[in-house]
Image (tube, rainbow, N blue to C red; front, side, top):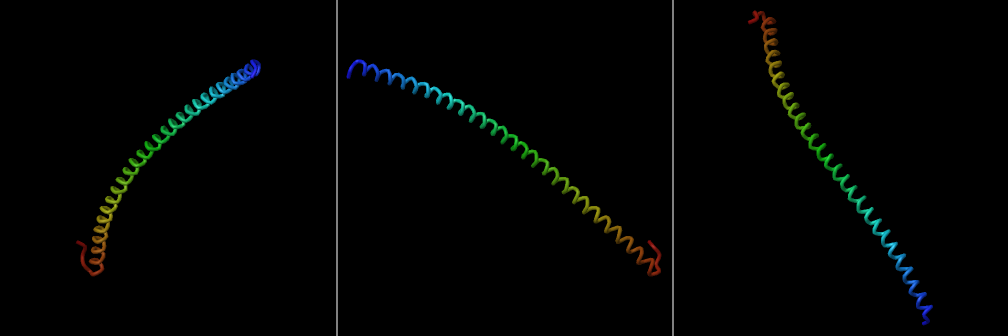
Length: 105
C-alpha cells in the first residue's frame, strides 16, 4: 500500500468518524428532547390525575351530604305521615260519631 492509498484511507476514516460523531450528537439531542417531553407529559398526567382525585373526593363528600339530607327528609316525612294519620283518625272518629247521632267530643 502506497502512502497515497494509506493517506486516502485515513482521510476516509476521519471523514466517516466526523460524520458519525455529528450523527451521534444529533441522536443525543433528540434523546434529550424526548426525555424532556416525556417528563413534561408525565408531570401533566400527574397533575390531571391529582385534579381528578380531588374532584372525586369532593363529589363523594357532596354525595354524603345529599344522602344525609335525604335521610333527614325521609325521617321528617315519616313523622309527618304519623301526624297526618293521627289527624285522619280523629276526623274519621268525629265523623262516625256525628253520623251515629252522637255528639262530637
